[in-house]
Length: 621
Ligand code: M6R
Image (cartoon, rainbow, N blue to C red; front, side):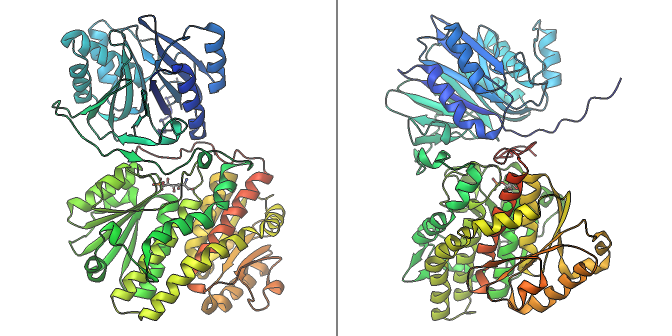
């Protein structure tokens, strides 16, 4: 018998719940469709009808469940319900394994992972419970039922279950003897309570309920919410009432839809100019960067002895751009740490260190754990986050929001572009405060970033046809190299990640000067090279590297500054960036690389917005 393969666990699942006067199944199905972008393999809905909880679930698309609900008619008239899109972790995709789980007494939907589900299941079996699915969620459902049977109190049962469960979860619960009420608990997994008029919602993501309301609470870890049509009560494990600010999402329904574009990814790239403007505008006063609204004091930036960026994936690559910018302009040492490694490296931090955690979602488990560790070590923590009220935003000592709007495509594009734009603005402020640049220099840098950059990004996007052509002629390979020096090397890493993520073409990002120390042996006519050369002082060196790889037969695509000397003679394809101060070239270069990955993936017919094996928000380690 072969051993069971280890399970890769990511939370792609989605939750929606509704209690109000509308058709619960319609509202819940609408919410689930909005969450489809997260990827899933089955779905289901439970709702109160005639004093009992009816359940309809099916493997495959939400549309299958919708059809089944219409055919069966068993949820007709229900005004309170919960629903779920599942991405299989424990147990294959099947009707049985789909959520909601439980019995006629208790039904639940769950995102996350119950790490100790095996001993809990054993305990429940010993108490006479039986199981019909292979899921950890059914264990949580029966555990809640077990406690409820013992204590006959809904809240106490849920609190006891929270005490027993080890793992991460966002769970919405319905008890059959408590109609028109949704209970919710969470730990390390996002869950919001949407607040409407005569109706309330629960959801794993505000986009699921935006059609109906944009005001919401973020439930905290180890908290319980009791949601009815006209009330939302939140409490901690000791049953003390908890108050959270009522947040307002500035995202519109349109922002969360494709709006005529083939994919969210290309729509989101097209939103970059506006996103940059929106993010920078509130932070500029008298033509200088200003973070007073965020209570980020000048002293804090001026006295920072070092800066550490901690993040994952693309957000970590934004930190790398920050490293080059800050070290160059402020002469302050900067470290960039991969959040999933941070904890294991016993980081050296003091109160004088500034730790910047970058995250689009604000929920990435590794980044959150790194943030908590940095706080424990006494460092001052600053979040650069896109989602209002997300866990990283709440737990960091301070937060600067990026106003990118909802990013739906798994591949991060506009979030990265605004992250680096904001980091440039912070860099200018810090350099000015530290006396490294004059007031007029600071004003000029700020002007370029705020006034010129949105237009430069627009001009970059306008080169779409050229980029698409280049993509067509480089898409038929299984392997590829990105090379660059200095900041271009950091962008090479991002370009490579983006390409791998959505096209499934393997690529390497290499510091161009490092090739000759071993890796150049891989360069053949079958290994095309994308060379990034946007820095004037490094250009000649890059040309030498390009000649090295061409001499080994590689086809070369070059991305360079407009007017770069002899570029057309050095490479088979050249994409020029629109004219820009080279200090900021990373921004339009990022857009080119995103579009290149997009068009290559499109040529290959990939599922661009939902690449295989990936989740938008990775809320487990
Ligand atoms: O939500 P976060 O910014 O914390 O996510 C971090 C990474 O998971 C994310 O940037 C990932 O690398 C992207 N899918 C890449 O496009």
